[in-house]
Length: 247
Image (tube, rainbow, N blue to C red; front, side, top):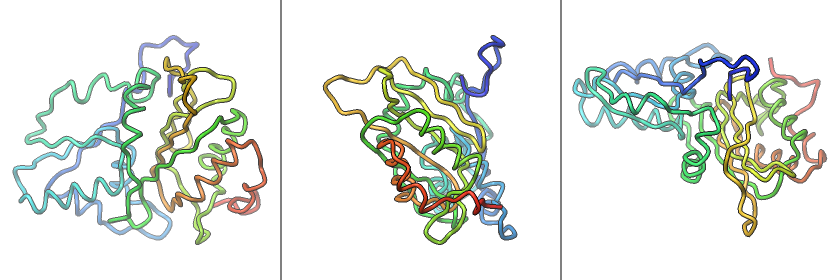
């Protein structure tokens, strides 16, 4: 289970991330400019969320509320948006999410099929990127792919800007493993965990990944992942080098 040491047998685990956005002032916080190199903190919190609650909807017009929705969705294309007044939320919508464990495999599979790649709206560098690649990934190479993104931070886009992944989620096919594997990542922390879902023998395996972050380039990320699936390093050197680690 993500964020939990299984050997400790603890009862506490990360169930999901909930972010609350104020309908009246949320857009102002999301639009707040930061010095070069820094990510807007409000945008970061929206990017990390599994559930985004837009509160105090009764205090704004429908036009202003629509702007808030658009801003949130442009940052996070995966999270579920709830709208409420006076912070009244059905607890079933924010508890027992299982957003970070293998129990979410079936729901995640359905969700990933409908997540679009978004266009920047406020912070021009934070977007959601999603792609599919058919085939099997070699686990060792997949770890290298993820670690270069999250740990080494040496993957750059076409403008030579560092790609910074805030949130990573997906279902992948690992070579010689019959069951689907969930990949989860939050900043520098990530995990691979087998689900209870088996791949169908009569269909080709498909890897689906969703990344939320800064300066992301869908095609470059897809090609790097294809290099992982094809078990070759030849196409990896174009967009990351050890001597060009991002600051």
